[in-house]
Every structure is written in structure tokens, then in C-alpha cells.
Image 1 (spheres, rainbow, N blue to C red):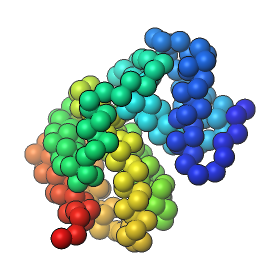
Image 2: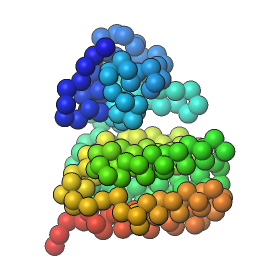
Image 3: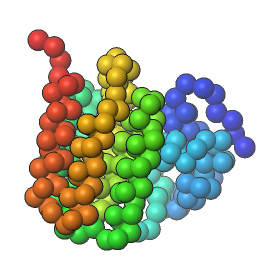
Length: 226
């Protein structure tokens, strides 16, 4: 078992997983073991392992295939033009991109979600609720919650776009919450609950509008002072 030092567990897990991929343990095209298998191998929890995988998806090392799992796409971290755009972009620009991606995904999820999708969304909402006291836990749970909705849209392109932005967004959100000092308010949780209920009720327009309204508020709160 490989022990992980303190600081960012997800970042360290991602680097250790990348090192093992580059060593040939999982060649290109290989399907990775599931999170429940990988997490103990790196001495981290499932949510941390999930975030590490998400980071490597965003970096082009791994690829998620709907209904099949996570596969090794490359052993080299080639920095693409898209990666460079995300690195340069102010977080408000990334949030504006989320408006397009997640607003559409929420509407599609309301129309296309399966009972299994809805169970996953409700489960991730509950995890998010319990994570509210801690900034890092809340951000990781929040990203997992929003990703579960994108998954329920059954649109692979929207999912790839979300995954590519996730590492950039995660770090900025954690920094913002730590600076803000207060987070996880009941009103914020209620806004997320309303989105879930609109998806459960199969109300695409309401799900779309509620998601956009939430992200617009978030974007305003993170806008630079003038």
C-alpha cells in the first residue's frame, strides 16, 4: 500500500496513479480498476480517488466511457490548447462556461434521467449536505453532485467538457470558500435540492433555469472587486 503525505490528497493520488500508469502497470487502452479497488491501493477515500481520476481525465491521461468505465488514454500529459485556455482563464470565465454546460445538462437530465441516475443524484446531494462544514469536502462533494447531473444528461460531450474544467474549478472554489470564511448555508443547499426535485419531476425548463440561476449567483460572488 502506498501511503500519501498530507496537503492535497487528491493531487498526490493523481500523481501516484499517473506514475504507476507511466510505469506500465496499466498500459494504454487498459480499463482501470474501480474506485473501491483503487482507493485502498493509495490509502485514500473513494471521493479522493474519484477526484484524482477526474484530474487525470482533465489532463488527457484517462478517459471516461459511459457505461464502460475509465480507461488509460495516454501516458504523456500533452498540454493542449484547451488546457492552456483553462489555465489562463479567470474563474469567472470558467463559471460562465458552466452556465452553458450545466444548464443544458440539467435540462437534458430532467428529460432523460433513469431511476438509477436519480438515485445517484439524490445520493450525491446527501453527501454534499453532510460535507457542508468543511470547505475542501464541500467543494469535492459539490463537484461530484454536479457531475452526477451531467452524467444523467447522457451526453458524452457535455461530460467530457465538465471533466476537463473540474480541476481548474475545484482549486478556485476551495480558495474562494476559504477566503469567504462562511459556506454551506441552508439557502445554498435548498437551491441544490430544488434542482434535484425539478429533475425528479421531469421538468427540463425548470431544471435548466434553476441551475443557471444558481451558477449566476456563484459567478457574481466570485467576480473581482472593482
